[in-house]
Image: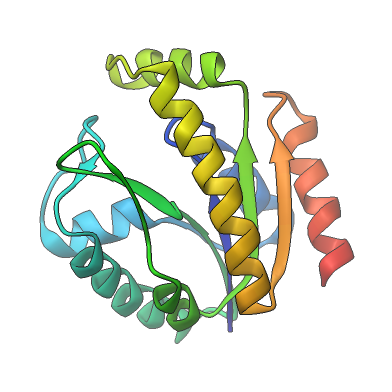
Length: 177
């Protein structure tokens, strides 16, 4: 039982890529935010400020463990860093990823301006380039640290937003496994 964790800043394209990888690998894909929101009975809206990071991660662990009772491998889209209610970047603690059984971390990155445009197109929200750049840096730094501590695979993929993205990640995953 393992989790392929796909990370990256908001708006980088995790959902699209995960859907494509799910088809290529023939394994189910889930969004961490959707799993948490469903369990809490709340609607996950366009604002990205998380009030209680640790509580949400506990819910996520429960939900993923339920899924892994029926699936050998899943793809889980989420974040290594989140924005809290004070607009600060906070890291999700390593022990949550240990409990999730993460076997590989895939970090998706892109130009901050592209991500900003994606977020506006999707959510009609305007984020500062500075915040997006800080999130990109934080995701890469945390992914490198956590992959070492978890002794798991790490793929850092720069999005091209074309058909090559999913195939490139698929090929990199096959090298790790």
